[in-house]
Image 1 (tube, rainbow, N blue to C red):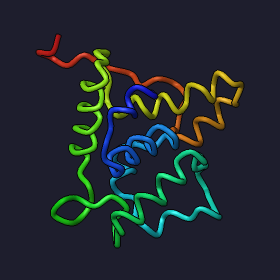
Image 2: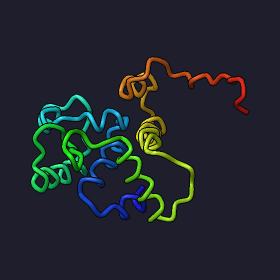
Image 3: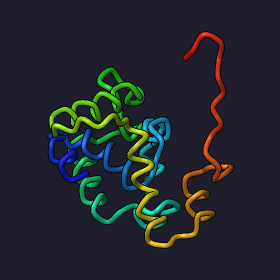
Length: 143
């Protein structure tokens, strides 16, 4: 993760990826965050201390008004932009493993599980209804 994050030069892009990783957020949750959703004193989802300074720096630079991460043309930063930031960082870090932004969410949960956190607690943090993996079905014409 360190090598990946070292490749991201823009504060905005680095914060987006670090929040996905450090809070286990889905990309769709990330792009819908509003400035009013962030409260460093009363947190419902733990905000890593290491990200708080970056968040404050980002806020001073970009001064977002509505969405925490705004797109170039206004409105919310797009999911495809977040995915492109991740792909570019992977490429720059010479990481050839097939992965996507959603894998940052899994990377958030893994250390919790390995450190002995209750699986039901992790399930609740991630907003999952079940701890069972999803079932995949075969569709006609797809091999």
